[in-house]
Image 1 (cartoon, rainbow, N blue to C red):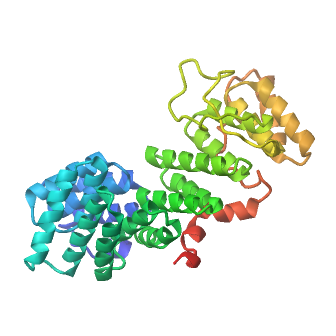
Image 2 (image 1 turned 45 degrees about the vertical axis):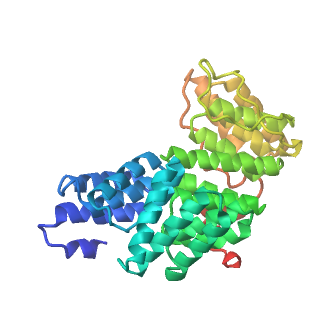
Image 3 (image 1 turned 180 degrees about the horizontal axis):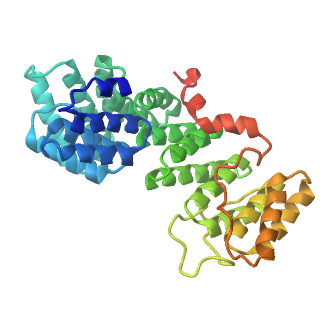
Length: 401
């Protein structure tokens, strides 16, 4: 990147350098930084610059913000009604927003331009994907797959086309068929949609370990994206519904709640694992806790968690949470239970030392928060979970291609 920037004439650097940096940030899923850089580019160029508006629209879409993506794409269509570039993405926005009449109009216009011989093969591919998206919106999945196939025949590596193909295979209950296109799209251009597609495909295929690894990666790479956090929490909850005894899902959901500052709810989740409680309600409602929630408060219902999750690791994590909630008596209780179950439990030993120091000096605060990433030894599979957390191995599994 530095060598490229160094070769840019100084007169163009104020707008071209941040544009290139925005592209790099987007590949790292740092969409907030990428958007900030593109907004700085707008100060140097016209607000009606179509390529810049297209990049802004795509970034909003990749981060899951359909409202702002819709606004940017509408600006592009107003400025250049014949522009075919990234109209397949615009079609997804229109479908998600429920504006089917506008989607139908877009599909008709693009087919008309294609029949008139306007544009290149790439334009024809965009047209087929738009038509396919309209068919998907009408629940005509057979035609949608047909038109999507026409587009991918022209450009098999088209990111939006592969996302579309993946979603269509999920819609017809063929999760195995959705994995390859989702992986192709994700490898080329990671986004919230590609993460969601992979998580849904793995869960539908009953491959919970891979689903959890991808969901954790999404949260790790987009820690400030509320939609990514919700995606992770929903994936962890679904995994627990399918396998209530899965410690990986249990700790992942608890860590996600902790990262979202929902310590009381995380404590309730882990307490249910300790007690082996059974509830019929969904795992965790992700709304903010009621006023006054905190120490001793009752949160929403939790899933059935098998009592075999009653492990020292669960008690150690509960000790950490109650330390943050400043309920030191309960924190020490859980740390001691963890040590009785596993005398070598370092997390419990360190937790006791920290809490006792705080109590001795009358300090009502805690030296740090619960480490939501410290999961490597909680189910006795440290190295294995560390590899799974990367997510790369799951996404690049050649068996699914």
